[in-house]
Each structure stands twice: as C-alpha cells, then as structure tokens.
Length: 193
Image (cartoon, rainbow, N blue to C red):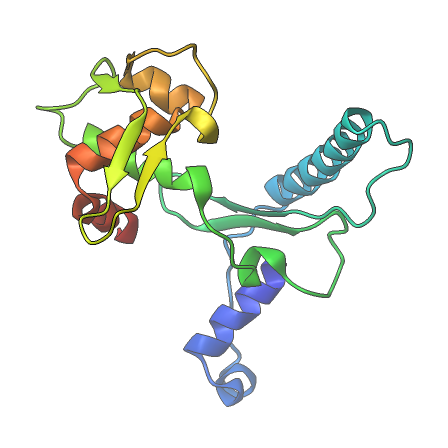
C-alpha cells in the first residue's frame, strides 16, 4: 500500500521519461520498523475483532474477509511513515487506505476541540461544556430533530462535563454543543489546515 502511494506521488511530480533518462534518486518517508509494527497491529486487531464479534453473536465461526486500513503519519511533519491495507500486507487489490471513502465520524471531533483549545483565552481543558440533549428546529419546515446521547457513551444524564472528559470519552452531545458555540466556519477552517 505504501509503494502504491509513493508511485502515485512520483507519477504526479515527474514524467516517466524523466525517471528513465535522469536517473532519479528517490528517498521515501517509509519507516520499515514502524511499517512492520503497523502490519502486526492490523493483523492482531482484526483477529481480536473477529473473535469479539463471534462471542457477542454466539457464532462459532470467524467473520470472513474482515478488513481494515491504516495510515501512520509523523506527528511533527505529517509525512507518511507506514500504510497498511487490510489483513494481508501483500494484497495487491483494492487499496483501502488511499481509495476508500468513508464519513469521518468521531475523527471530526478532533477538529472541534483543536479549534477551541487554540482560543486559549476562552477555552481550556477544564472548560465546562453543555452535555444535555439538544433540540434543533428547522425554521423552513415543521420538522425538528433532537440530539440525545445515542452517538456516544451514556454518563447518566450529566448536564455539564469538563472539556478534557468530553474529549477523552468522545461525548458527542458536549462536542456538538462546543461546535455550535465555535461555529462551523471556524471548525471547517481547522479541518482545511
């Protein structure tokens, strides 16, 4: 998967004739030890999930073709260090890490909290966030929508939680409340960076 990514980048930046004529020396950001660890983590993780599902549904057979994807980037530079495509690292078929398109789900929460914490005069890790159910009314119709704790863990009806707790435990009501305070425009700007 990493070399597919690398080859694609090379094709975008150089013509094939340049590769052959100019004798390019290419250095990659691949970390072989980290790649091996990532492959092992993927394999073990998929095996664990397969057995958890088997126990949960009381089935005695593994789930066939369970797959995953992983991209490991350096925290300081964002350089790609490892890419894992499913349970078999040598699989040459569909490249999930680079081609699959999925909603970001809870990963978007990171942008909300980053946006807030960059405003250190207003927000810090102890800031209390509203964690109560939220009702949204559409001004253009009679329909509405009520956000309850269905998209995250239930904490027993707390109305306020500290920012660090909402972040650590992925409390979606508190995150949505913070997102409304910040405004979607600011959160989208953080995502674009």
